[in-house]
Amino acid sequence: MFNVAMCLMDIFLAWRWGDWRNWTKYQSTILYFISCDLLYNFLTYNHPLWEYEPTLVYPNHTMMSLIAMFVAYPSVTLVFLGKYPAGRIKRILWICFWALLWTFLEWVSFKVGQFSYHNGWNLTWSIVFDFVLFAMLRLHFVKPLLTYVLSALITIGLLLLFDVSIAEMK
Image (cartoon, rainbow, N blue to C red; front, side, top):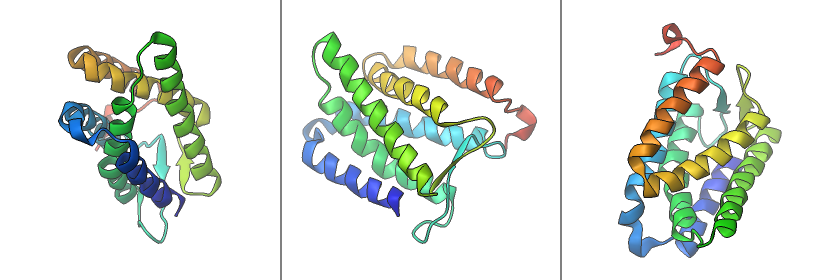
């Protein structure tokens, strides 16, 4: 239920603080965000690094992942990019705020049994990943081609680091 509550909170945040007037400016970054998670789920189908655990509301990882992709990710992106501050220090603090918030929410989800780690992934990796995630969302917004190149390199690096073999891919 915690993950569902988080999605409802994301909807509220987007409704209250999201930049809806300019949603088309953020559309490609939202699609980038969703595409990256779809790619993660596809490439690690037989070798997951983390998973959502089933609850009464959603029966499996796939359903919760889809809810996150199509509810949480657009909502968060509309707020994160829509309220992105001017000034280097404020921008760094904004990325830190979102990365730490997402890490904290993941930790709570883990503690209540709705999230699990596998194959060497852990909360420390999630902290690093969340900082990279929010930096990449901003980078995609301003330099999408560079972001795709960096994303491909990061993906290859993570697949090698966590020993996700081609034979294990779906």
